[in-house]
Structure formats: C-alpha cells, structure tokens
Length: 101
Ligand SMILES: [Zn+2]
Picture 1 (cartoon, rainbow, N blue to C red):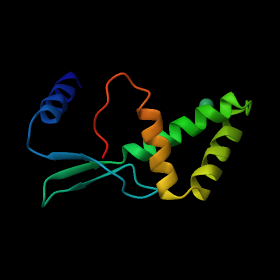
Picture 2 (picture 1 turned 90 degrees about the vertical axis):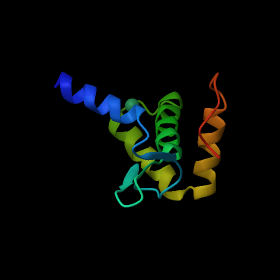
Picture 3 (picture 1 turned 180 degrees about the horizontal axis):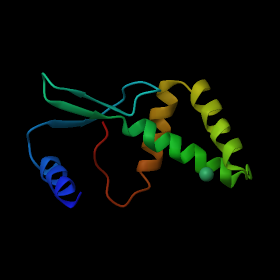
Picture 4 (picture 1 turned 60 degrees about the vertical axis):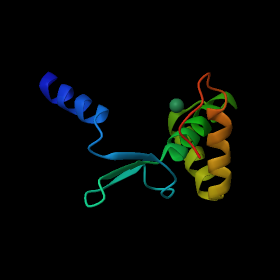
C-alpha cells in the first residue's frame, strides 16, 4: 500500500498529466483524457457542495440524511454560474488564493 501511495504522490508531482481545475457538470467531480493527458478536477462542485452541506448544518438541519437531501436540492436548483460564484466566494476566504479562473 505504502508503495502505491508513494507512486501516486510521485505522479501528482510530475508533469506527465496536466491538471486543470475547471467546471465539468453538476454530476462529475473529475475526469481524465488519456489522449490529451489531462486530468480535470471540478473544484467548483466540490467546494460548493461541501459548503452548502455545512451551511445547512449551520441552519439547524441536524440530521445527516436531511442535510444531504437539502444539499442535493440546492445544487439541482442553482444555476451553474451560481455554483461557481459560491465556490469562488468560499475560496476567497482562504489565506492563499490560487487555482480558479
Ligand atoms: Zn454533515
């Protein structure tokens, strides 16, 4: 296992594949293009989904299942531009800014 993790870490640090952080769609967290050697990560979706989930906890939606359903409800109804905007807003709160365009 340790060897496999080490190999993955090495690959992540190499330039064998380009890594792009960009919007894909509401259902896809990432994908890989073997021909073009590009790995895409839908950071907007990760960040917004996680943020909405925790926000709903903040709003007092206590139960995990209800929170998951609420998160899905929000994501389904939000426009792509709103999901991206929310993610950018959340990411702006970090100390170091990078990645999104
Ligand atoms: Zn939760």
